[in-house]
Image (cartoon, rainbow, N blue to C red; front, side):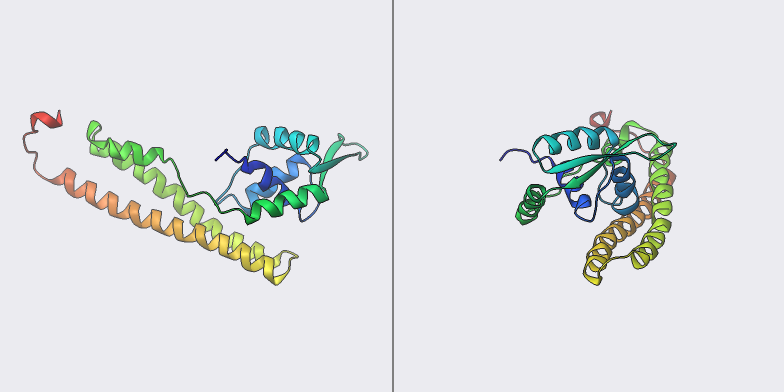
Length: 194
């Protein structure tokens, strides 16, 4: 099965609720869906160019006095159809890469304190993320949107909350296990461990 460029569908989905510039799209990705999806400007602008070539979006130049001109993109009927067709496709299974877990897997090549440091850094980042979820939840309720859209936004946010809680639980367990292990009396290493 050919690889699907999901950046285009993330962009088309955002444009379903109104015209936006590339910068506006980047801001929306950061403010609305960053707990499960991200796109850089380096991905957004080339994708917008391809979408325009395929006539999935149209573009207008917006000029404001004292400001640089902006390209504002609007989804076309053809783009809406492509987006809705993509929504009908089954989602790809989640396959993710996690550099921290790769380092933990090879943790015997480090000192336990180094492994702890990596996990504690993740824990600190997840605690910050946890505090953002309340902000996002409040923002969903104040946005001008239908109850149906709010429902689906809340469900996506809820998934992020659960993942965040699971990571925090794992961090606590891993830190405790490593500390217990590090405090055990040292035994002679087997040759196969070297």
